[in-house]
Length: 167
Image (cartoon, rainbow, N blue to C red; front, side):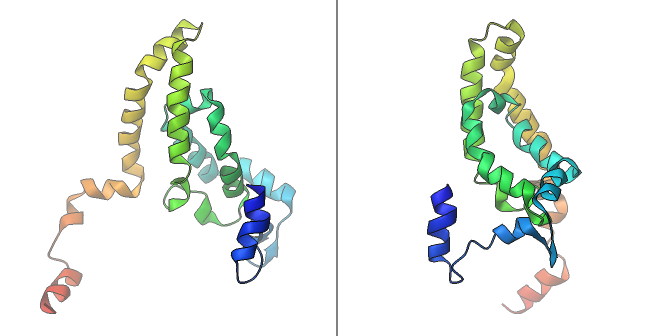
């Protein structure tokens, strides 16, 4: 990770730097201290919501796996960033994290099934259907929700009429 950020990306960049460091150090043109960036993680409902979405979609079972540590560099960068586009769940920034989190969930379920805590072993058996239910419920808060809305499929708006007129 460090070699990628410090050597490979700057070598491929026309500016010779990793431009995203500025997203942590500056909010627009205003400088931001590292302490303010760290404290900003705890002071943002959008960032906390993002964390709940990322871990919640695994029915919190990803927390039982050390594989979850693999997301820390990317997630840490997003949380420290001053760019609000990096915080939410609308853009693609979580796409790279999800395969790791789902593998961590599978590992967490496997580890939990052998737990000495009866409630955890029992929950592990239901975790996958719970995760599916959470994922379906979350579609109402993400762009996928548009697939369930009838207005998505309307064919009588002005844009579509103009496209038909050009055919």
